[in-house]
Amino acid sequence: MTTTMSGASELVEVPVAPVTQARTRRGRKDRTEQDSVDRGIVSATDWRRKSVRRGWRTSHMILLVLLIVAGLGPLLWLAKSAITPTQDTLQSPMAIFPHGVDWSTLSTAWNTVGIGVQFVNTLWIAVGSWFLQLLVATTGGYALAVLRPRYAKVINALVLGTLFVPAVVLLVPLYLTILDPPLIHHSLINTYWAVWLPAGANAFNILLVTRFFNNLPREVFEAARTEGAGPFRLFWSIVLPMSKPILGVISVFAIINAWKDYLWPLLVLRDPAVQPLSVRLPSLQQAIQLDVYLAALAISTLIPIALFLIFQGMFLRSAGLGGAVKG
Image (cartoon, rainbow, N blue to C red; front, side, top):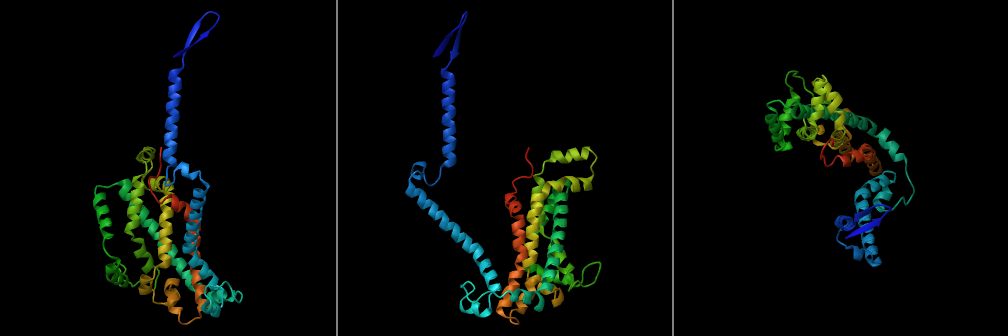
């Protein structure tokens, strides 16, 4: 089918049907793709009904409220009990400040009981463990994934094999090593190095960083080597700036694990003056009142909550670790 257009001196034929058919096919394809995207448990026809929409939105709201209660409920109860007198907590634990608020429990837990000292100790342990884990994981992953020596596969297999050894099996040999470390032959008991060094040797972090570095574009490394960048310059100026997502993930894991670790600090940090909160608080439970103990527990949760709020965006974006750079 064609349409003719007459002019002063010429006749032009314009094809109409092919253009119309192409537009029709394109419209059908767009509708099909939109239907596949919007397809779910409830069809589009049912979703137009007010009763269906109201039921689904109500169920979604109920599920959201349940998730909030399950996730934030214990933390909110702990925060409430930290400033509630002991008798109110024992008699009506779910009541909201039946006889007012007692802010003095926070100062008592921090100053009188000495939670401030253990808080600083925990902070030192977390910072040292974080630094050593980042140092070992990034340098190990860089050597295995970027430099790629001939024996890289062997080292990678050995590191992977250590993950299959139960942690409890390593307690005795690790403790004997801390008592008499090689080369220095000086006990590390009651020093933070006894916690930092074992935390730095984390095989899971090395494998995680190695996998991330393997996804980085090799063309960038080759271009940097062509410009004269050596191994250290390549690591510091190229690899690390491209690895912020995985560094954020490891940072959160390292600090949270160091903050809540109990068994190993209990074994190697016997002096109460250097013990962290995770070790010191259980030993103080029988010696202090319940409201002061709950206040100390609330103080100990401040850093993990702050870390989650700061790094939640980076952590969620990096959860898949699908690739570093595209394009």
